[in-house]
Image (cartoon, rainbow, N blue to C red):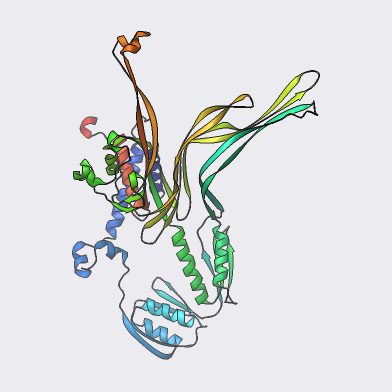
Length: 532
């Protein structure tokens, strides 16, 4: 398994980065990947039911269902009236493959009427009704009395507090210059500048302190049971419960369900692209495949499944297809596509994942000066406040994964371009920041494998066009007579494609195969004839 994870990490790393290729072929990496794939195939074949046998035994299920279903146990009708517990358990397991051990403190009588049940279902029903502590280890059932006992339950979760904040704001501000010249003081004069802003803002905040929340929840579950005590050890990842068996089972069921939800993962594949629109698509990308000439192409096997706002190409929606290449090919029919970034990240359930690619540059955000006057000389003290401004691509995503493979995503992508904009404040030219921001903050739901489309982030730029007659257009002064200058309006649209893939047993195998294909493309294996 360690080799498998190592190969996956190497494959993901090679997918997201461009590095200088070595002249040596990575034979060891290829061999490791192929070995893991072969081992996985062998293990799968060992658990696969032959087709002919499967068709005879379970004709209504396919092979996948047969593998995932437990061994079918016989069902029976059970009726007992005021039978001693020891006699009931002994008679229940008599003639079966199961063994039985009964603790000396087991007492009481059992009365049940159950129809069409298995032994496991019967044991669970009796344990819930009479409070017996019944455990199964292999083919052996162990029955203990209904008294107070202590059990230690492991809980696999990190000991940490995590806070996340996502802001999207629309603001307008100004920089003011306040000069103070006191006629009654000849020692100093001051000049101060300050900034002010107004606007709207949307803020999404997440706070995670799971161990404190778990303690509060378990105390609430056991509030009415005076005999039940719960001790939580976050450092060791253990929950110790003292109480009756039925109360312990209730806490174990809750912890098992909670851990199952916490450990759910989703692999997020993202394509951030900028499309320079053709003349016929100045209003934005047309996602209606039926209106495009590429509709007849079999590769375009996707359709819009959920539209939030598709007016003029804007909005957030999902595509039924799961192939990025088909969507990108559609975009290429409407303009020039420039892929800005292709990040991939894995996130746990309800945990924020952040991708940030760019650089920080410092700009002036505050300025103050103090002028002192004395008999000797004049001096000016200046105080400049610098603040870093991020320029690049940022994406933060928070997923919520349900049991059916659906993913609810909070998505906040932003493309920020920061440039210098010199302003004169108090007679001094200061390098201030000018930000060109394209961002959105939304919540969208999709199924595993569907492509989420975030579009409509338009930008307009004027482009100068110059055409001239060769040689004559280069003559100083007179060349303008043979030169034609014009301006064209260039529109670009930012398109973000997000494909969430809920991680299951086969997800890493698929990613491993993709990594092997990429390695083969980058470092082709030489054939034996070529080697000779």
